[in-house]
Length: 419
Image (tube, rainbow, N blue to C red; front, side, top):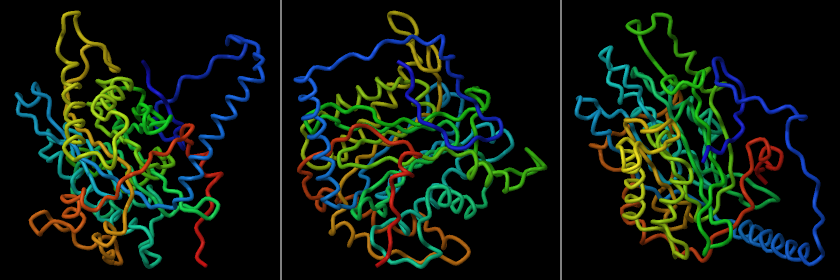
């Protein structure tokens, strides 16, 4: 019941290095077994069926987006001590995010929730400006990938604090063999995590894990994740923003995964993945999202799944009839702020795209003025309140053999060209 891993791109100072592989002579070996003709024929039929379904998905050439809900709750033990919840979540059609503010910052009189809030607001505005499919943007506003987006968001903020973060970005601009091939770009800094589930055997099958990011913890310690920070002389008189820029550009883990309708994305702070094993998360998803569903999952069901995951995390910190429950971080889990985002990949229909409207031009130096909630909801938020009206039925879920790593995707992607 361990963690699945993905290749981390690029070393960074102080990074926790993976366990070195066993020497070849100490690894068990077995001979390759002969496969009979009938079994081969059955395998070929299965492979052909899956490839055909993938080809149909490319042929549909449909842009995709996220349908999502979230839930967060401070552990009761921390709330009883007056602890302030510094987790922040982001649920938007083109981007999902979880940011976990470092609570120790509050010992220096800094609100640990402000910088996570500001960065996710900046990420949201950038993504909704840059990633609406087929929008005509000036070159300086074009989407250049998850690292430039996160860097630009950080540079648009001025508040103090420290945080870990994970973002999932829906990129519809990728073309493979001339056809649209939506991708989910994932960027993580620190110990927030992401899990993608897919019905690999068709719409009637169970959700299975196809992608899971790794935590980035310095020397493997749970209390010292890699972080994005901006602090003053009260904490570090030698700090400059260039340090955080270097963390984003050299320390972040970036992955790209093909996106298909019906994919379920589970994102959480360390309070989720320190307490629940991957198979437990998948089991909760399969319990509340049974196979055979038609169309987008109701909002209330996504919200309930996020809440069930958070409550299951808190339950790990209470002893049961057989003692303390097992958890990835150890028996008895971890009492922590716990936040979870559940995203479903759905079609971005023409009706939805018109509702989003043309992107607004950002200022030359960075983002335009940030709109607060008191200034009125963004157009896409009003859209999500009426989500079921605009979504056309999903006639089938696409299948895939698994996921591709970022390195594998880089080899196969063809840049989109302007005729």
